[in-house]
Length: 569
Image (cartoon, rainbow, N blue to C red; front, side, top):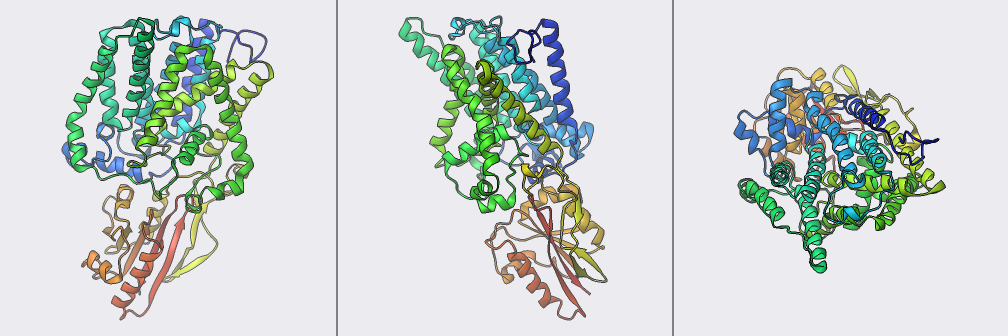
């Protein structure tokens, strides 16, 4: 990406003309990678929640749909679908646009930190060396954000995480602008954007805390040197953002129900996994439902070598980057504050809020990528070439694994009798030809709600019933069904057949076929409600000439949705 000098890795400085040409090409590449296949995957459960909250009958229903997440993304999505419709691609388009914008913001951030012509005049940046690589580092960082499948995945998801990344970059730019200019405009912009970020995702508080910690460090260091930084204007900006958030904070305290990340886990191991996944992306060494249930040991047993290689390619340049930051006190203090302080705070609150998850920590990704790129570029000789090629290899492997996955499902050879016909025992990707060493038969994928609903719709007659477990999976089911088939649900917890009958009420009366849709099961035995409903219907349909119970049909084991069929003929 350096355009001067005899080789690709020569530390030359791009000319202004080539600089802008490269940046434009990176933005085009980012747009292509984020828009291609935008509507290919079916909506998964959380995306179904986005659609459901944004499609409420009233604006009040959208704003106050839940307290577990703030409402900004539901509002954005509602405005968007009113203008462009609610197809899968349309629902994900705002995230894709923000993902493209993040590439430009990433370039601005790296330029502000490493290019002498743009670095802040306060905060220790003015004492850093000028090695002529700042402009090139900014382009390399933008390239990583543009091509990384970790960033691409969240840009192709109808959720707020792409917005949180963009807001984290924007807040950092405004904070650095304030350090440079010490002006009111920067602080007003920071206060407003910080409030928007808090209304987007609660974890924006860690972004603000990182900046606050850095400002406090500068004040403390300056006080020891006799020239303390006046941080009172910045503190007022943060307080202003907090005041703007107070109305929602009151609502959250009264209505927050908590967010589950599954089984309890050890925080340090989970944190290491999150940091590792930022470099690997979602499609390399896939962690799907079977592996999640079996534990991380199953992944290591199958793909220990590949996991170790990815860790080496990713963490080695990060270590190099931290070592080289010793010569850049301004950048070092800023990066450490934005990376280390949120991690420490997350670990401190973990006993109460165990929410160390790669989705919630997306705001850390730009900093890790920045340090990795900086470390590779600042190394010398063969180490520099190896580290740079390692990052390139990570991007290539991630792109191959993510963009070549086969999401088209085909019925398995096995069949189960149903009425006068038969149905498959499962539906799986039509091809396993995608480089198997990257997934070992666990190809990256989302939840196949579209395919499962199509199966039910083709079999269902008027008056048939669909029963859901747990009840909240209606968030995705409703998107594809839109009320076409009668619906009922079973409790989240495990109950007996008698209690299940009470929960269903009269919903089973007069039915000749019932479908049971299972996903995210919260029972010890995932088939518990299949057995319960089978016994219940067999008893109720005892006068039927023939009773059939088709065992749950799996739709793609990646994060499988399962459908059982009960037939009264």
